[in-house]
Every structure is written in C-alpha cells, then in structure tokens.
Image 1 (cartoon, one colour):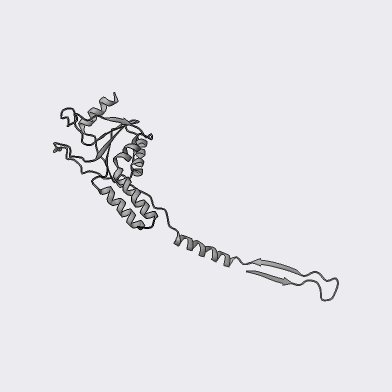
Image 2: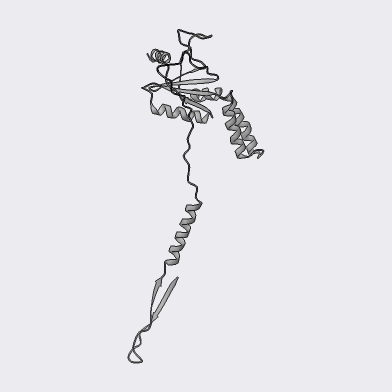
Length: 212
C-alpha cells in the first residue's frame, strides 16, 4: 500500500509561490505477510525426498565353539567373492577338493563389471523375476493393475524359489568401490535375497591359490 502525503509551501499571498512538494512512503507490511504465507504453504505441501535403501539379509552368527559340520544347502544361488580389484564367483553349493561334488570340486570363475560380466550373470540367473516384472509392467502401462498391485507382485516374485539368491563374501583386501558397484548391479537385476557372509576356510584357501 502506498501513502502519499502532500505538504504545501510558500507564504500567504506574499512573495513568490513555491511548487507543492509530495513525499511517497511504501508500506511493505502486506508484502511481508504474503511472503510468509507462501513460505508456510510450500513447506507444508512439499514432499521431502526419502533415502532409498536396499534390504540385506544377515545370517545368524555362528558359534565358533560349535561350527556347523556342513554348509547348508543352497538352491539357485550365486556367490560373489571380492578380493582387491578382482571379482570371483561360483554357482550353487561349494564343494572343497577334499569332498568334491557330483561335478568335482568347486572352481572360482573371474568376472568384471562389463556388459558380459556381472550384469549378464545376474540377468540370466534371475530370469524368472525379470520376466515377471516385464509382464506385470505391461499390465501396469495398460492400466490393468494398480501401482500397489504391481509392487506386490514384484515383491512376491523375488520371494519365489525360482528367484536368484546372492551371497557376497569379501576378504581383507576387497575394495569398497567394488562392493558398492556390485550392490548396484544387484538392485538393477531385482535380486530379492542378498546376504553378506564370511568366507569359509576352504573358500579362503581356494581364493589364495586363485590369486597366485
């Protein structure tokens, strides 16, 4: 709101008359009130970004006095072993040289983060979940299902026995960058069960021979 005050000047008919002077004063109170109202509105109606996290499955701690005699059976799983800047993996159950499996002892294969590396391994192993995601994604686009239904179906497919499970093991030389990059790849591949576990003694022995 602007207020204009006028004041006359000059004498009362004596001498030369002077021009009238005017002064302007702008009242900023309404504008300040409006600014606070807008600020309050945006604060109350804004949605703050929530951090995105990935759930990891941590196994129960093993009693060193009573270690398990045998490794639990693993179905449809892949184990990644990180050491320095290298990434090794094997699929299924681990069989040491002392107790070889039906196809002999376990052999560590080396891979990387290239197009034919970790991403392809996860895409091939987790084909069931990715195919279900694609099918349900088309239904969502065609508005045959709601967003909540799509997310529920995706979560159920990750829990299916055909879904790929991933174990991550590291030694004391593994880099944090490789671990983070691997977790990112697991998220892209829609892996539902991710378990960081410790290296077994037999795996550590095999890893040392592989590094040499």
